[in-house]
Each structure stands twice: as structure tokens, then as C-alpha cells.
Amino acid sequence: MVLVYLYLIALYFVGGLAGEVPMVGGVLADVPRPSSTTSIAFTARRAELSNVTTPGKLRVVENSGVCETTSGVFQASGYGDLTATESIWFWFFESRQNSDTAPLTLWFNGGPGSSSMIGLFQEHGPCRITNDSSSVTLNPFSWNNEANILYIDQPVGVGFSYGDLKVGTSQEAASDVWTFMQIFLSDSRFSKYQKNKLAIWTESYGGHYGPTFAAHFLSQNAAIAAGRAYGITLNLKVLGIGDGLTDPMNQYPGYITYAGSNPYHALVPSSVIERAKTAWTKSGGCQAQIESCYNGGSNSVCSNAQSFCNQEILSPLAGNWDVYYVPTPNPDPYPPNIANYLNSIASTVGADVVWQETNDDVYLNFATTGKNSRPVLEAVINAGIRTIVYDGDADYILNFNGVEAMVDNLNIQFTSLYKQQAFRTYTVAGQAAGQFKNAGLFSYIRIYGAGHQVPAYKFGGLAVGEVAAQMFTQIMSDQPLSST
Image 1 (cartoon, rainbow, N blue to C red):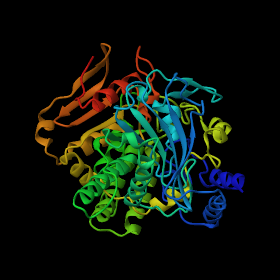
Image 2 (image 1 turned 180 degrees about the vertical axis):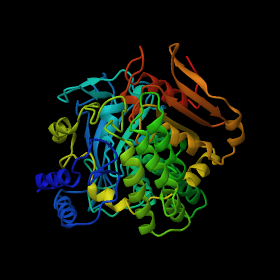
Image 3 (image 1 turned 180 degrees about the horizontal axis):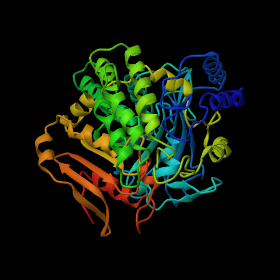
Image 4 (image 1 turned 45 degrees about the vertical axis):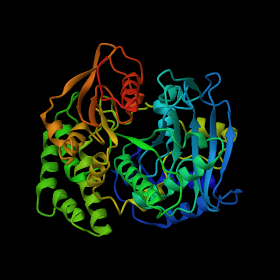
């Protein structure tokens, strides 16, 4: 049944690219319509629920020997069982130094519906997949060099997670992640991290996840402090969002700008760009439909806006270049595929099901609910959470033109200071690697030569992931970005 399910996914995303943004019926990030195919897939995933669960507890494999091979560094992988029919997969790596006092970082990939094993094995984990996808090598620029890091496959049904697919909004996802963290930090193996500084880092659809998760954590903390709820307070201090979708109204025009003028080459002829401009501005066009969605539009209004904008703007403007790394024709085989490797080690690390990069049923659940998360992000920043937004300048799918427009429209306590700043060159070991601004507890950086998965790339004479590691270390040390 698992093989049937995976085959159905392959059929459903005909012509799809490997990555966090599905290709549906030949259109990037279109809204899938329910069909007999999706209902069969949904049933197939539910059929795996015969596994024994431990509601409210963890099921853990310690020190599997996979990925982190640094001597003396603890790792654990397994499930947090939210209920008897909902199990969230995690993989934890303690910091390579000072683990008892180091911050605890949560990592979430986007989609919605994409596995956080992408971040672990292709981006910034203790190991990286090799170019032939057959094995892994130790990553000297892993984010667990100085932080404990917890990779979480969520919502239920994503990656190695499995169970009832109930989640269809970022708020529902936030509630499940909060519950998972209560289970995780109640376990004797991890309870020592309850007081450590906590950070949320995410990318792509994480532009919605990150602010919503952070806001929910802060709300639950306040409820606990006021005696309205019971639980473990989460010591949230940092939010990081990479190549994120947060505010479609401000971000969609970025596709038009980037397609015609980016650091590499035009993606399509000028005639295609002109048609996209018309699709944005015309009566009943993309801009008008997003505005209707923002102004209290129903789920169907928002769904129709997403479908129209992606059919008329996002997808045609991509041309035949890889949407995650535009210097290369579509599809770019880098970062290497991780599916076969993950499934080869699944039983060793305690996974119960076959891994899948993106769950189309989860994507379908979310496809009718996407709105504007910028007000939530503003509230989180104004609550005193150190926040960084970062973007790779070779990424089209969530390009820096759109992300910077979103940032420029933030209404936060640091807005005036941010607008007074000029971009400065970000250097790593003396080499120019990007452009950045700091304003109070907020930072933004555009990283040269990086695609959608920023830590997976290198620039100039720097190593893969070196720029992202410096950025991460500075922010996690409660410092603004600075050149070295």
C-alpha cells in the first residue's frame, strides 16, 4: 500500500520538480482539486496506523550512529505521539560544544507538507548527502556546532510523521507543535533544555509557519503565567525565516521584477513579462483577487487567488530555469536527492513508515487557507523576539525582490531605523558574501550565490554553508549581523 501511495504522488505532481513548492498539473504551487487519486492516497497513509503508539510520550532511538559521528555528541530520533493516531517525527542533535547551556533550535521546512529532513540532510545538519545520493559526509558548518537542534516533520503526515491528517492551517500546525514540545521537554532525556534559550528557524512556507508558531508560543506562555493554562513555558528568543512566503500582496510583484532583472539572466522574453504585468494589474486580476482574500475573503476566494496568480504570473515567468536556483536550466539535480538514503536508514533511526519529501494531502489541506502573515510577524518582532529574514539571490520561487518588499512594508518598532539604514556588504573571512541591514532586534540579509535552500550553497572561495553558519551563529548569540 505504501508503494501505491508513493506512485500516486508521482502521478499527481506530473512534471513536478523536487523541492518545497509542488508542481500541480504543470503549474507551480497551483491549488489541487480533490479527486479519486487524492482520496486513495489519503486512505493509504491512514492504513499505516497499526504501529504501536504511546500517546503523550516519546518513542526514541538513541545514538543510532547515523549522520552525527562527532565523538561524544548525543543524538536521538523517533516520534512524539500526540494521540493514538497522530505521531510527529523528530531528530535531535545536541550541540558539539556546551550542550547543557547551548540554545535549543527548532527547524521546520515549508511546503506546506515538506519534510524537515530536507534541512537536515541538504542544508545545515551535522551531515550532508553526497552528490551521488548514496551516503553522507560530516558537515563542518553544521548549525549544531554551537546549538542543540531539533528537526521536526510536521504537520502529521509529513516526511516520517504519520496519522490522521487533520491540520490545514498554520494555527492548527502551531497547536500541534506546541503539544509536541510539551511532550519532548517533559521527557527526562530532554527536560534539561526547558530553561535554555529557544529559537525557531524555518524556510519557504515557513514565512507563514514561523510567525504563527512564535505567536502561539508567546500566547501559551502568557496563558501559563496568568494561570489560564498549564504547561512548560517555552523560552522563545529568536525567529529566523529563510526565503519565506509571508505577504503575497507585496511579494507577487517580485516575480515580475526578478524574471526580467536579477543577478544572473532574464528568465523569459519581455512579452511574457508584459502579460504577467497585465495579469497583476487588470480588473479582477492577481492584485485584486489577493486584496479580496485579505479583506475577509472566504477560503475559496483565497484559493482562487492563489490559483490565478500562480497560473498567470509565478509559473510562466519561471521559464525553463530551475526555480530554486536560476543559474541552471530546469531541473537542477542539486541539492542531491535524499529519498533513497533516508529510506535505507529508516529502521536504524526508528522510523515506522516510508519517507516522502512532500505529502500532497497536507498540501491540499492548506491550499485553501493561505492569507497574510505579515501582521503576525510584526507582532512577534514587537514582542521582543530577535528576528532575521534571509534570502538567496539565486532563488526565484521566493525571490529577494518580493521578500525585501515584504520587509520594507513591515510596521514594527524598528521601522524608522530600518528605513534610515543603507545596505552594507556582508563579508565572511574578508570575502563579500551578501548585503544586509540591522535595526534593533531585526536583521535582513540577501546572500550572494544562494538558491532557495540557502545553507546548501557556496559562494566564491567560501565553503558550502559557511555564510549561513556565520549568520546563524551571530543571531543565536543575540548579536546583530556583522562582517568578519
